[in-house]
Image 1 (cartoon, rainbow, N blue to C red):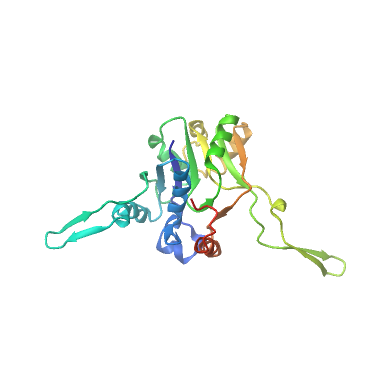
Image 2 (cartoon, one colour):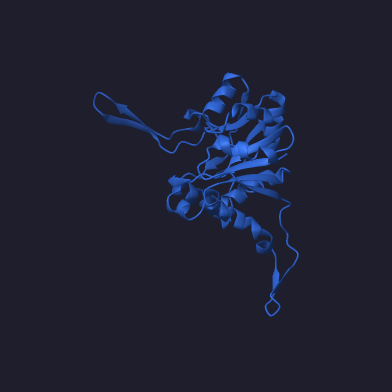
Length: 256
C-alpha cells in the first residue's frame, strides 16, 4: 500500500527557512521533517512512498539521490576518480518523486500521481506534521467503516489561556489554561483514501480540503478517526523550535 505525501507547497508562514528550502526539508534533529514522517509509516511496515514535489522540489530529489551514500562509509580513490560505497544500513524504502507543479493545488497534486498508485486504497498525508498515531489502528478503522475516505482528527493543545472578564467592571476574574477538550477537532492529516476519491477531485483546480472534502462529507463517504495522542504541525518557527526541543530531549512522541 502506497503512502502519498503532499510536499509541494511554499510554506510561507515559517519565514526565512522556507525561502531556502521546501518546508518538508526543514530539519528536526538534523533530519528533514519529511524523513520523520516516512519513519512513522515505515515503523508500521509501509515502505513505498510517492512524494508530490513542487516548490524547490529539486532539493528533495537531491536528498534522495545521495541518501544511500550519505548513510554509508565510503572510500574515495581520488587518482582513479572512483568511489567505493561500503555496506549501508538504510531503510527499505521505495521512493517515487513526482513533479506536481509549482502552483498546483492539493487536489491537482493527487491527480498527477494517480498512475503511481496501485491497488484500491492509499495513505495520504502532509509533509509538515508529525504524530504518534497508530497507523495500523487507523487502517483497521477505515476498513470497518468502508467509506471512501478517513481522516485522522485531533484536538490540538490550546496555546492560549482563557480569561474570564467581568464585562461590567472590565476586571479580570480568573485565568484558565485552555484544555484540549475545549478545542475543536481538526484535520491532522494521516488519511486513508479509497481510489473512489478520484471521482471527487474534478480537474484538480481546487484545494482537496474544500469542495472534494465537502462533497465527500455530503455523500456520507468520509469518516473521522479520533486521535487523542500527540500531533503537531510545523507551520511556524515556534512549531519548529518546539519539535526540535522534544527531539533533543529524547522525548519526541513520534520517534520510532
